[in-house]
Structure formats: C-alpha cells, structure tokens
Amino acid sequence: MSTGRTGRRPGPSNTRESILTAARSRFAEVGFDAASIKSIAGLAAVDPALVHHYFGTKRELFVEAVALPVDPAVALAPLADAPLESMGEALLRTVVGIWDSPAGAGVLAAFRAIIAGGDESLLRTFLLDVALKGVRERLDDDAETRIALVAAQMVGLLVTRKILLIEPVASMSIDDLAAVAAPTLQHYLTGPLDSA
Amino acid sequence: MSTGRTGRRPGPSNTRESILTAARSRFAEVGFDAASIKSIAGLAAVDPALVHHYFGTKRELFVEAVALPVDPAVALAPLADAPLESMGEALLRTVVGIWDSPAGAGVLAAFRAIIAGGDESLLRTFLLDVALKGVRERLDDDAETRIALVAAQMVGLLVTRKILLIEPVASMSIDDLAAVAAPTLQHYLTGPLDSA
Image (cartoon, rainbow over all chains, first blue to last red; front, side, top):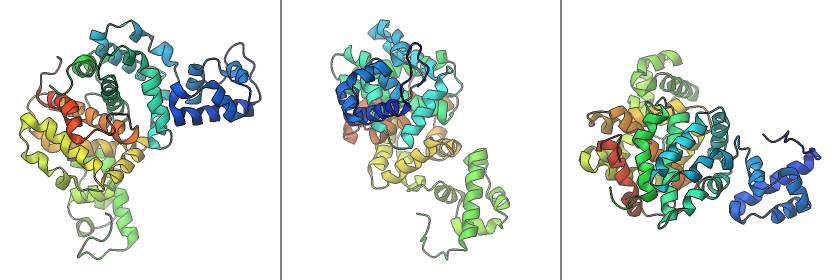
C-alpha cells in the first residue's frame, strides 16, 4: 500500500524513502504523538510541505512508514460507536475480523518482523497511540494498566490463533472466540482490577 | 546449555548436530509426544542408544534441540504441588519468575526466533506437550480450550512485558502483575467459559 495513491504524482523515490526512513526513526524514538511532521521533515532534510504532499496526514504517514496493510482509523472505526460496557466484545470482533480478513497476512508479517527484532517501539506506539487510543481516552481510572492488559490479551490471541495455531483457538469462529475471551477484555477495560 | 554435561564425553560434533537436526524436524512435524527416540535416531541414521548416550531422556533432548535455557521439568516443578484452585497465580508467578531471571534472556531469544518464522510447531508442542502438560492433565472438561486460552494470556504477557515493554506491565512487580492478571488465568483454568 505504499504506492499508487490516486491523484498524487510520486516524487523521486529517494525523497519518499528519506521521509519514510526519518518517520520510522522518529516514531520509534519518541512515539506517534510526540513525533511532529516538522521534526520528521527536518530529519529527512526536506520541507514539511513535501511530507504532507507525499503522505497526507501524520496518521497516513505512519500507516505507510510501518507498512500497515490497513488504515487503523478505517478498520477500527466500529469501536468509536461501541458502548464502553460492550467494548470487550466489539474490540475482539473488530480486531480478530481484521486478522481473519485478506489484510490479515500483512498484519501478521508486520508483527513477525517486529518481534524478530528491531522496531518494538513502533509496534508499541501503534498499539497505544494509534490503535487503542480512542478506547483509552474513554477509560476513567487505571487507563494505562487497563490498556496494557488489553494489549497483552489481544497480542496473545494473535500469536495463538495466527502464528502458533494452537487449537481450538486457531480454528474457532469469531463468535466462539468472543464468547470465551471477550469477557476477559471487558474485565480488563471496566472490571475491578486486583480481583477475580 | 548444549555442552559441558558432566561425565559425558562429547561425541563428534557432526553426530550430535545430526541428532539435534533430526530431533527438531521430528518434534516440529509430529509434536513432542509422538516423536520417538527411535524415529529421531532413524532420521539421523544413528543407533537410538547413541541418542540416549548424548542427550539422556527425550525431554532432555527436546531441551537441547530447541536450545531452551532452562529445563522446564525443573523450572516448572512448583506447579505440580499447586492446588488447582490457585493454579492461575502459581502459573503466573512461576513463569514470569523465569522470564525475569537470568535465564529469561534465553527464553526471549528463543521466542523471538520462533515468531520470526520457522519453528512454530516446536513452540506449540513445547507449550502444550511439555510446559503446560501437567496442568492440562489435571483439568476436567474443556481442557484443550482452557489450555489454549492460558497459553494466549501468557504469551501476550511475555510480549507485552519483555518485548514491547508496554507500561505499566513492563515494570510491574510480579506481585502486582499477579494481582491483575492471575484472576484471568484462574478463570480460564477453572471458571465457567462463555461468561464473564
């Protein structure tokens, strides 16, 4: 998904690549929120306007910099409308739906590459500052702990279902997986921590 | 831990390596339980007695084949004595204790290498047939589902705490992590599935 955006003329590939390299470096170093387009442009030694011209918004730049196969703002849109009291199930259904979709292979490839070594901070800022940001903002107390535990459960399900292929989790329908695992996510989101 | 076993004279390294290669291949193909020393010896074109001579038991061979930094039978021994009704906490404390110990770096390196691509089936058979086998045998109904969910939660905590370093999970004491996450493990082990 790094080329072919309609209506944009690709610039010299070395400029594009310089910007993407600078973006990966800044996002990894300071996280999504703190990385400004200006600082990325500075690192790439280009005008900030050129970054916007090639990549659009900061989120769109991030999507291309980490080679995401889907735009999280689009793919995770259903979560914005989900009530907090059923967010666990909405999160599981939406995210597992992405893994099981044609885009899932790209998600998996990106995850494997990151775990193999290197860009952990990119995945961390993606999870916390992009993918789960909207959910986190709706939590009251202990938001950091709750989101970290949600991330842990989702990452574990990804590895179990899509990489290690541990049955029955690997072959379960999304309905069945939601039945057994969504209550855990809901507990982490809104339940009393420190108790069963 | 692949050399220096007291009282054993190392054989020609190509024989040792042939056996380890054959062992990895068989464990990956059919799993720990179904892979016999005889079939591994056959694949390596050596006498089964030689496998025992170099590596001891099948479990010891497995430990060396997958380059485990600890022997799970020793490291997980506390679980055998834990009552089932507090197994969630025992499991979390024991396993996170290994990750946080000096042996943790080796565990992490092995995990990263497997997720990077290749030997998923080795990690799967390790989790199901070696590490969690004793726990699984003590579960009544839905043992496969329960163990798969436990594996998902533990793998997610490993990635969150030790690789992605997501706070506060990354820096929490084992006590604090047990307080928030052990109830989930206990729920997966003995709670009613399909409900909150």
